[in-house]
Image 1 (spheres, rainbow, N blue to C red):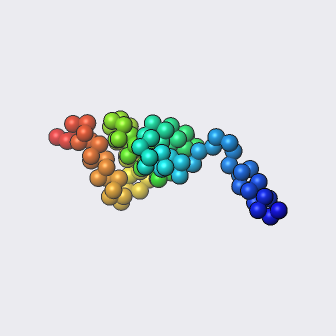
Image 2: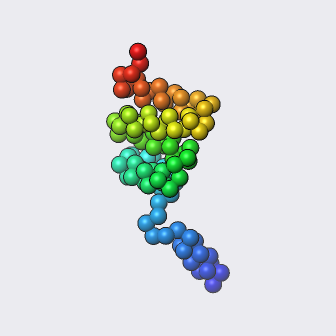
Image 3: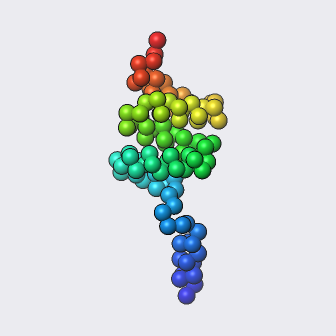
Length: 102
């Protein structure tokens, strides 16, 4: 009885169709980059200052060849966390892939 009540609470807390960062990460790791992009774009609308969402969106965008989108996502991360060296490295990679290195 207690387990049933707990499951009901868990299911009620997450509306059907609601996606999470973990869903996006699973899609990314599973090679479903388009799905990850859609989830992250939705999450970004809800929370534009989320560092993890922005960073993963940058990675997904690079994998999909959307280098300008990736650069913009990494720039957002750096605007919120200027000392983030990994984001700085990924931003440099995006600029390189766009041919913007001179």
